[in-house]
Structures are given as C-alpha cells and as structure tokens.
Length: 380
Image (tube, rainbow, N blue to C red):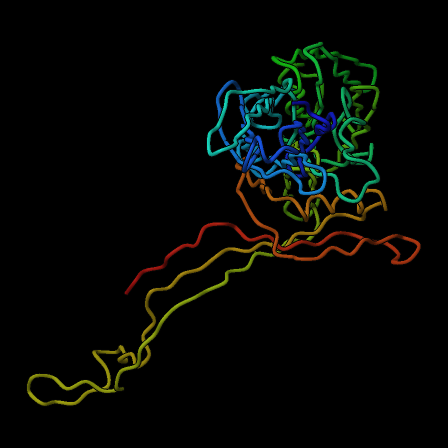
C-alpha cells in the first residue's frame, strides 16, 4: 500500500486534509471481499480517531479527509503570560498540530495490522480565503504573520498591542526597537518549532524590557522584526475614551486595533410584567389608591435582564487598513480592552463592505460589539 497524495506543507486544519491511499487488494473483490481502507489519526503519539473508507468505485483509491477530526484538537485563546515584548507563545495544540496517519485494511469483516504509516506532518490553525493555491502560510514563515500596514497609531498609555511572528524553527530572532537616538534589541528564542510568537509592541510593554526607554514625550518609534519595520506613531488620548480590540487574525495569531473616536454604550433590556387593579381593599373593607404618599403600582416589572453593547469608531483609515480590518470583523475571537481588562465580545455585524478612498472618500470603521454576559436585575 502507498500514499499517492498527502496534504501540502503549511496546510490548514480549517481546509480539507486529504490523503489518498492505494492497494491492489482493493481491485480484487473476489480474494478480498468487502474491502475497506481503515484510517487512523494519531496526535502526539495518541490515537484519536479511526474511520473506514470504501474504495473509490472507479479508481479503487481510498480517499480520506481528516480535517474535521484534526481541527477539534486545536484550541486557541488569548492569555498573555508576559509583561514585556513577548506576551505569549502559541504552539502545539494552540496553533500547530503534529499528525501521523496510519492505514489498515479490512476485508471479510476483519481489520488487519497497520500496513502504511505516514511521516509526521504539521498543520496550522489559519484560513486562506480566496487563493489560487492550497495555502498562503508558507509566505509568512520567520516574518510577522499579519497583513496589517506597517504604520501603526496608538497611545502612550497602551499596555497591550499585539503583533504575531511565525517561528518555523527554534532559531532565535531579534526585535529591534528604535526611538529617537536610542536603539535596543530584544532576542527571543522559541521553545519549539512551528510556534507563533505574540509580540507586545506597546510603549509600556517595551519599557518592561527597557526601563525608561520611552517616556510620555515620545512621539514615534520603530519596531523591526523579520525584515519588516513598523513605524508606531504615539498619539495623545484625545477627547474620547480609547478602546483596543484584540482579535484572532486569519493566520491564527493575535493582533490589535485602536478605536479612539466616538463610542457609545447601550443596554438591550428584557423584562416581564403583570398588572393589578389601581386600588387596594384592606381587611376592614376600606378602599384606597395609595399607601401614605405612595401610589399603588398597577403595572409591575419583574425578572429583568440586560446585555451590554458598545459602538466604537476608528480614526480615518488608509485603504490598506480597511482591507486588513476585514479580519477583525470575521474573527471568531475578539476582546475589548477596558482599563487593562480583556472582555470577550462578539461583533454583531454580518457583512463587510470593502471601501476605497477613490470611491468612498475619507473612511473609518464603526463596529457594534456585544459583551457575552447577560445580567439580571432584582427579581422583585
């Protein structure tokens, strides 16, 4: 038995992971009746799944797509563990997954021993969108894993501003910070291959590694990593409350966008009610419409619940920024940072219109986000 096709390098767990196997036994139903290919998925040395596949009736090949199984074993969440430039490392099980496929044969109702074992292959938690190849991730190894423009606006007070970097090997890489005449280098060494390093390039995070390197008078600095240099413009807080949206991008890493223009908060409220008569009759038969100076309630509300919603606006955006922020709107994981705390939210919009200056003039992005919790008021 041989594998005639296996998924290409850098394949995504969110796309098809198709293996094609062939054995001449499949074409000999007289000797090998009711023949099936039996595929096993092994992750980190542990068998996770077994499936039986009838041969293709025309080619007698076993065609097996294991993507629905493999992606269940990748769980990603934003949990910053560092206070400096390196905020978090995503690796095996949280961004990448090492998979081995083994094939057995079944015929005459009996499953035999393993007859074919594939090499270990690594798959990743990204998505591709419309492309003309199997995957785009190979273009982002050992470079920042993002489509964001290289000019970034944030405030000096920001403590969390994320930029992901794909480390294909365990080789160290440098993050070079330049502010004014000061240049510092932070060397980061991945703990394993095929990891995603979540870098925190905010001024306060940089100051953890380089105490006093930046002050409130800093107006800009650069961050160079993987051959790409980002220019960070440090803005004042402005007159509106600033919110930072941290989100899972298309490559499976976390990055950030500043919403520093007008924001509005809303409550979506649910409650039940019942009606009573406008008067009360006491035990002596006296009818009244109030108790002291307080009128009796006719309509009474109870079992109140509410959800919080937030409408946020960015500053004016370039065309490239607007294209990139489609990944925020489509992201399955979004957190809003408020006073240092990250609150999980969902974006209520269900479509995204790509805009350009030449057509739409000056553009900004407005999104509505819903906080996940539903709160109860007094039951009454």
